Image (cartoon, rainbow, N blue to C red; front, side):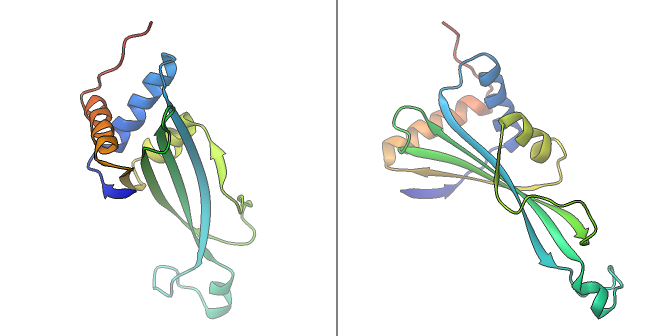
Length: 152
């Protein structure tokens, strides 16, 4: 499989998928998930914490993953979005968050990662061969011009 970066607006991509889903024309396998990661708080003036206090504070990042693949021939290409949203500092007293990846629906992915416009989003494609890459590029073109198949 050949992987490559894609230059497409993530909001347009998710908007197009949601429109296809609403019309019952979503002919793709969709997998969306979110997870949280923790790192020790950085030693910067911004936090102004002593050594002991800093040990109790983590920097939390919310990560989203969206994968799209065709229903038929699902291994010929995959379109992936990876979103990272730095949520900020967190202490042990804060509300707990899941420690594992949790599957979410497409609308939740849009709500958490696309609408807030604060996540850093990377889009990449992966294709088995040149023909699969062409099919993926045709889909991306349809998304860019917001073209949808007719029902029926």
